[in-house]
Image (cartoon, rainbow, N blue to C red; front, side, top):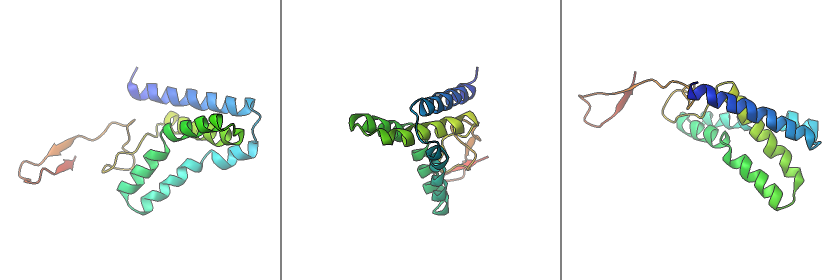
Length: 134
């Protein structure tokens, strides 16, 4: 089984577990609609530039921030924060299951950690060590 397929299946599992947890906790279904696609607001970073957009998208599509938010919610005994954290994880799982991965700065929008990257060739006549995507 390929690593890409494993990561997609992992995303599907996290989506299912997150939505199950959200439902079991009896959290507001209106928040589900409001927060599920909120991480995609990071795509607005591409309006600033492709490098910034890729970094902002990647930062908002890793499990670090929502896991930290969920941990803080537990430590602070703030159950209202569980919903956004769970839905954030569900969104990332959804994206991974569909094959949307973390963006690679300096590469195309559709080249992610889940896609097959284009090979990079070095131009022998280039003195600056620049790489040229093929």
